Length: 314
Image (cartoon, rainbow, N blue to C red; front, side, top):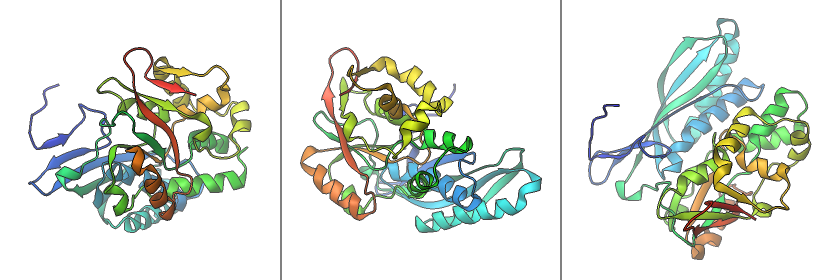
C-alpha cells in the first residue's frame, strides 16, 4: 500500500492505536476516529446512546477530549420513527461528552447501523499510547466484562431484565476520565471492545518483551453470565478472539473454561484498561469511583517475559 509519510502523524494504522493523531503545532494535535455498530438492544434511544458512547471512547482512550462528531447511519425506509430516537440518543450522549454534533450521512440498508466519526483534541505531549506500559505497572479495568455474551442471550430472549439493565448502564457510560487521573503516571491506555480483554491487552504488550499476569478472581464481570455461557450464548466474535489469541496465553489448570472465555468476550462500549505506576493505582481507583466507575479493579500487572507465552491467567 502506497501511504504518504508525514512526521506530524503521531499515530496511524501501522500500529494498534485506538485512533489516529495528527500534530497541528507544538501545543495541539487532532484525534480522529470512526465507529459504527448494529443494534444490540431493542430500545432505539438506548441503542443510540450506546453507539455514541462506543464511538467516543477511542478519543478518551488516547487521553483526549472530543470536539466534533458526525452521524453515520444506515437504515431501512420502513423504520423512520426508530431512526429519530436513535439519533436523539446519540445526540444526547455527544452533548454529555461536551462535543458538538455537526451533521452526518445516511444510506438505505436493510439492517440498521449507527455510529459516529469523531474529532478530538489533545496536547501532543499528553497522548497516552496503548503500547507503552512499563514493567511493574498495575492493570486497572474500569467496566465489567460480558456484554457480548449478554447481548447474545438478549437476542435469544433468555437474558434477565435486571442483568440487561446493568449491562446497558455500563455500555452507555462514557469512558471520560477525570482530569486529575490523566495527570497520574498512566503509561498505557486502551479501551476494551471487539477483541476482548485478551486481544486488546495483547496489543499493549508488543514492545520490550513485556507480558502480563491476570488475576482471574479480581476481574469484574457482569453478574449471572455462567448460565448464558452454559446455554451456549457465546458470540462468534468471542470464539474467534479465543482462536486468535489463546496461543499467547497460559491459563492455570484449575480455572474453569466458563471463566476463561469471558476474558475473550467481544465488548461493545467496554471499559478502559490502564497500565499505571503501582504507587498511584489506589489514587486512580479512588478517582474512578468518584467518576462513577464503581466496578474498577486492579486485575493484574505488567511483567517481563523473555520467552514463551506473554499472558498468564492465574
